[in-house]
Image (tube, rainbow, N blue to C red):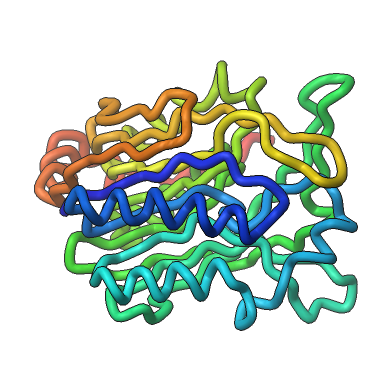
Length: 277
């Protein structure tokens, strides 16, 4: 299966973002990709809660989800919408950061709500409190496809290896990590974390990412690291998008997963032990 990872510079205008992702989607289809992946918050990347409340919609009304479902159906391809921000019916008004796996008939094959919220202080001037606006998910998700079992995650999840081990033990052969990674932490941690998750589980890791300085009509502009990556089950970098928007491609073969896990069967070798006192 030929997979295409789209690298975007999404802003806080969902209509403009749909046009940008649609053009790259069509490019990937033209290159023969059968599995197309987009980054985290494909529909709207914004630091302004006011702007988010204005433009975000419930899942059933989201224009980005509708457009990409139509495109997947028209092209007959699988699509991972890395995530879209959607309104929920939660009493506190928080959104969901939700990843979707779309089947070639346009149906939703799987949904995953990001579990780990990005609540960090990277520096004195760079502080994130994702949980202020988004409520965390509570369930790990895998989905069967003809080219392998997919385990869905989003961005900050990559720092929690037990999630990936559980997904792999549940049968996942392809781990998706759509992201809008901080430019500061990306420079030192991104590649290492992705390769570690691949090596620990003997899985493909596909990480489509946001990149650059993101347009904002309101609030502070975000900067993200880019470098969408495809990592092989042996931990090798198969493709790196660099810093510009665009598309990278990788051929997936589940036999490579079988071989990596045969050579290093660590998923079956964990011993039980007591916690330290």
